[in-house]
Length: 512
Figure 1 (cartoon, helix red, strand yellow):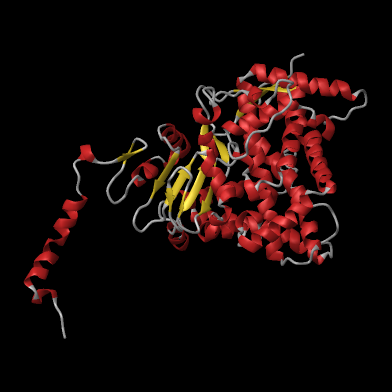
Figure 2 (cartoon, rainbow, N blue to C red):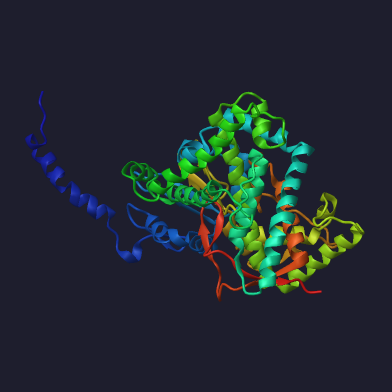
């Protein structure tokens, strides 16, 4: 039997009144609109307008929200868009990264937004399940070898002695040169990690004219790729980047060009090594180590080493950029580091090298504490995102829906008195030392700078070795004066935490 709304007057009336009924049901007087964590919650769109309005200063805004939140957690869901929750509660972090680890993988949504850059399942940072477990075991085995640790130390030592120290010496002699220390550190880190990943030296920190043009281009486009990835994650509509890519809109147009350069650079090295019969040439670089297993295609080898380049280049340069800025504002901290470094140098006796041995670096507890404290305040990865596999409740009672993106924010955690005390925003290395002055680690879920749980960073020890070696060698000889003006440097939230406008410094000879 045919049925029509118009055949029934009551149904017709209901149909005509439906829009008005919906409006009346949704409408509330402004003074009665609910608020969460001090934020106005709008009907239909919830807290989304606040996120959109503050996306260019997300870290500062979100930290302020968390201070006013009793749970240090914010959730949001808008019809038609991917839901999400962001937390700065250590108990929630432990739940996500350990207790209910299986329910919070990277997830297909996050993997899809990263796969054109980092590959799908071929790299440890963009894989889940069995693929991730295989990558983790393979990488863990390699990281446990003394030969790799020595190879990394040698690569850093070469870059420090042959390039970084001479560059700073020239700037100090000139007296007027202003160095962008962030750019210097990014060049340093890229040279070092390319040696470790590929066995190749792009010479980005070499004197002008010595670096190959493709190396300079490779370095420049890496930031473009990171910025495009961050734009994908920050967009309320997680599918919008695909539309921009099809239409050739920014930043996806630049991303396409960046990927062509990044992949082309890596592919060229792999192809030339394979043609020369030296792909698995038994050197200590990652490419040789993974190629030796014989289980990777050229494309998967490219993805593996690209993952390690991202980890090694950007995290260390980010950490040290903020460290040197903080140290320039605290002469007392620099003096304590200098005393410790000079004591290590004196104990080494005559004939010591320009750098420091592993044993000497391990004994530098105050330096270790200062770098750790700097990363607490300015974590290289300010926030880490996972996907929720099935409906869940966090320990604080917050509901997280299936398919939602779940983020913990290490930057905000550092600025909450309930976690770090009333002096949480102060740069105070002493908080990491015991009564004897020995370094004392913290709960990793309170300090998730190197992540925690099964995905704990495998390169943590080597990262500290590199950073301590660089800082000790530099501050033994030079001191920096920040010339970027008054106020706090601008935070740039890319895949790693960068400094807007760079880090302009004048180099001075170290006193005493």
